[in-house]
Amino acid sequence: MFKNIIILLCLQFFPSILIAEVIVSIDEIGERMPINGPVDGFDSSSNSYVNPFKNDPVLFTITFKNYMEFGEGVLTAGQIAMFETYPETFKMNIYKSRRSCSVPKEVSDLTVENAVMIDEGEGIEGVVGSIPFPNPSEALHHVWNHILRYRGVDIEGGSPYYIINPDGSRTMGAGKAIARNFWNPFLSSDKGLQGMIMSKVTKPPRLADGAVLVIESLNALQNPRRAWVYNPGTRRVRRAPDIAYDNYNSFSQGLTTTDSFDGFNGAKDRYNWTNLGEQLRFMPYNAYEFHEAKVEETLTPFHVNQDFLRYELVRVNVVRADLKKEKRHILPHRIMYFDYDSHNMLAEDVFDGELNIMRYRELPQINYYDEPMCNSIHSATYDFATRRYILNNVRSSDVPKVNWRLDIPHEDNLFTPDGLKRWAK
Image (cartoon, rainbow, N blue to C red; front, side):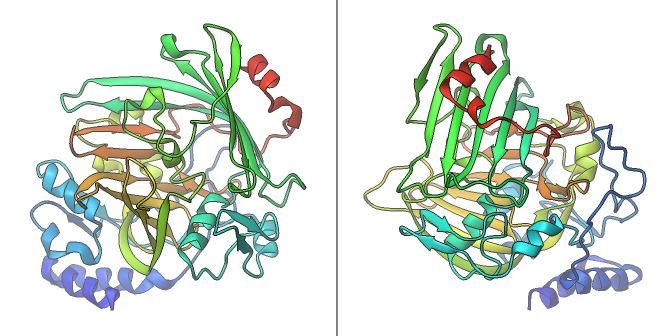
């Protein structure tokens, strides 16, 4: 049905010479052609990822002038709000759909049947290293697939973040992180953990060396998240039970929450979750051109430079999270869009208690085909009240490369309060 709608819309906007090309592109949405290894021209010593689809033309562009012809059938509420809030600058260049995502063969080989959710969805039991729910039927299946998607093993890297104000002024910072991901086929573990991560701020100077350690279990009810922070002023480590849910990190200036890191993370007990089913939506996908661009070229007032983003008609699993009456969270209603192929969150619409749109988030992805795995190149959160946005977890050819699978693994005893203090100095 959606395919036919898109074809009809395309007929309205294109001269006849382009109609055949557009119809063929839409017709090929259902074909999956994963990239399982490096493409020609890839240099493993650089942080550049050659665009496998560099010759694809823009099929059409959605702007404020024509977005109403598409409407909520293929645009999200957040995208519509972007067109209405920034009518002169926001646009979406639509390309041919390219279902390029893949995972290591070892992950696919382990993925046979669904894992088991326990404790009202707060815990999971299953074959470690697999895609936990290859046949999802519940809302939290999609959330768990996102949280436990393959993201490397022993990880090390850093990334900058940027907060952009409507007048173009900005705040810039950066950080470093190391992590052990236990949900993968390359690291055996009976610890019942998702993973362990330590991160520290390197810029700006007033926050430098502030660091945090988080240990995440596979059951937030039986074994809640454990976290510690290191304060460079006192040179002490203390427990940090508030690093969860809607807690704000100091660097974000109120623009993102702890449980918004990496799309969504942590305990799920504050929301009622509803599976809205599979849909076709225009999503930021195969964003190689943005990854290869200079960061300075991508930062513009109001939103990132849309000239570098690629949107495709993507099959997504849509999940709604509504705050429980007895619970508290500053983001009361959220609609999350998870890629059917990679399980990455690609976008999120955030609403207030009156169901007015508050924020829109995008997480464009590429296939890091030397792994292989699909992961976001940044998270962009747009706040409609202040007209500011934050671009964080930035991965780009312009910044140091993240190592997703170190040759020499991290030692588990590094991820302790004492280890945090040593690493943060």
